[in-house]
Length: 418
Image (cartoon, rainbow, N blue to C red; front, side, top):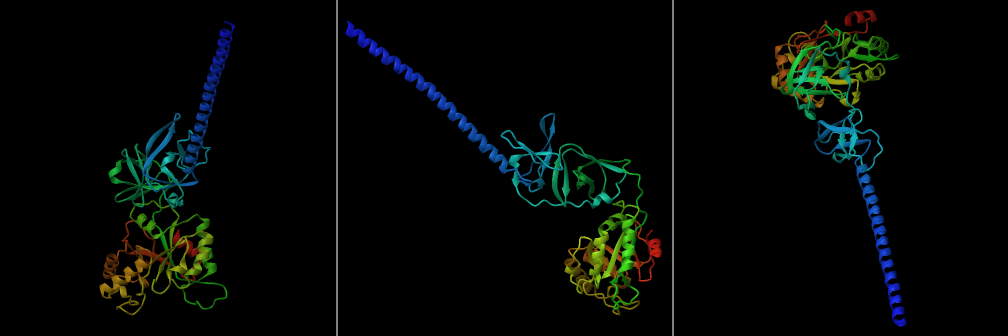
């Protein structure tokens, strides 16, 4: 009996130990399982954060046409779309596993991180349009409006937009949106209405001045009346800068003359003819931040000599700045040379000068025949002499200019351009 009891006790103890071991194993297994699951969770979160970070950069590209969001009451609501390949800069943020959106710097809108890829070249957009006077008219768009830059859709905005008109176009309007000048086509316009956007009065006319050759102290090789000493140019440019003149380019002048741009009261187009010595103007243009247009004889002078953000290049023919070809005056070839020769020369000049649409007649001589050649070659503007200012409604192929010479005093200059 005692043996039976001992055996039973022994078995019981073994059973208890087994049960303990099983329980211990279960708890240990559960602990190991939980610990393993936590490790997996941490690893997955690290992987997710790493993935999110891989889409972040100071500069990123939009990888596909994607939604734009604004943050309203802690919720991200879609306001439209931004187009593929747009390059934007992101605001700096602390990224964690819950980060789903990145904020676009300057725009103030958000995009999903998955729709971005790191890299791309951030382009600095021109803000020259800020010098234009607003029209006292607003344009109201339809919903789902497309906003374009250089003919390409940049944004599609779900809601109607109500903005002042900056520029007018035959096919629509330019407005400022997200600190950029963007185009709205007529088909996306609901209506246009009068508004009090500015009390400033637009220029009633614009002086287009003409320089030829610049020379510097100690240079006695330029003795013609159309040679200008550096000191004279400095006087003129200093006056323009001091009096806050808007120095236009030819496209801006054309839009102004067509009534599509409102130019500030103090506006001027500074032009230089031919190309000889013209590189000497560049340091002064850059010093005084004056924009000028060089009407270049493209077959005589290489355009590479005149690289400057302040120097626009337009055409003065390719190789037809030659006198005594046609009857009368100085005999400009534009008045009578065979039309195909004229058009060919003009098209070569346009192509070399990056498609310019502005032309200056040699010797200020023109006629209807020469104008027709200009039109066939694709020019939209022709500049002559005339000694008066350009006013809206003028014939765009007979835009008058004010010739200057070495004897033009500062007071005479001010009188001409004011």
